[in-house]
Length: 386
Picture 1: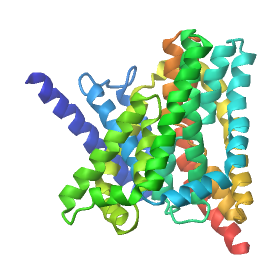
Picture 2: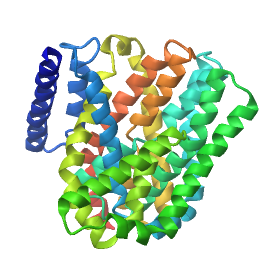
Picture 3: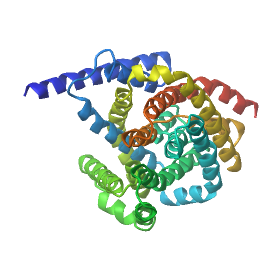
Picture 4: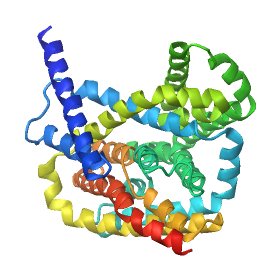
């Protein structure tokens, strides 16, 4: 009973603090994400007042936050739009992979960390945070912009690439045979293909099953189905975020609009918890020695993501303002990057890899939303001039 009381006290204090920080961000006119991250650092390991009991509970809430963010993002689009966007932006996806995986791999090799650490760092610098980008698009009202489908197609391409990359990385870290690695990759690809086929071919049946005139029943069905598919995807070495996104894709029309309205408060609550948990995992004492290198790597990654967004949006026939927005939306790093670094550190790839990755991700997770807000006036000026 005593432990439960402490959990309530800590978690209640965290949520109340997030409410105060969110109000402050609204008053100043910025995204609350950087403030949530800083709060997490303050209450995590090595922080001002580390949480004693509620961190494990918060970690589950953080996972829910990512699932709900990607679910609501998927509700914005249907399966046909997804496939058209993916096939039309495959070349941009490959450019994204080459431009943004290279800085991490080169950095690890120059530091003498070896090929396995280089593969891990390539993943750390490659993947954009789907959760943070989804929040930025929502906060700034960019969801309906012409460049947003291009951004989403790149995010989905990255997530599908991760479905292949993660089994390969874990095989390398464990020193397993090529055959075992190939089996793991095959399972991941089959899983993603099955979910995509179900979303494309049986979307109407899924909608008929989920649909309900009662908002409570509809909410329970949508969230339950999303968590079920996300859990299945995670179990089969595919991102839970991909599973939740595809569930959203399978639902469309008036049903999707109703589900979005019901999910919005729940999504915002657990999304805030996700950003706090990310900060909780970051020890400020370990960040300081690698802060300079992390800042340099982050600067390079900002440039490569901007170039990626500009290239992809230009190929889609989008104007200069939209190209700039696409590039900026791709800057944040987050959940995938930390997972990759955690796998590498746990397997003993290199002791400094975790600290460098944490500092790098913290910089881009905080700066990405700020950059989007700060450059918005300049983007508007470009659009008006065009």
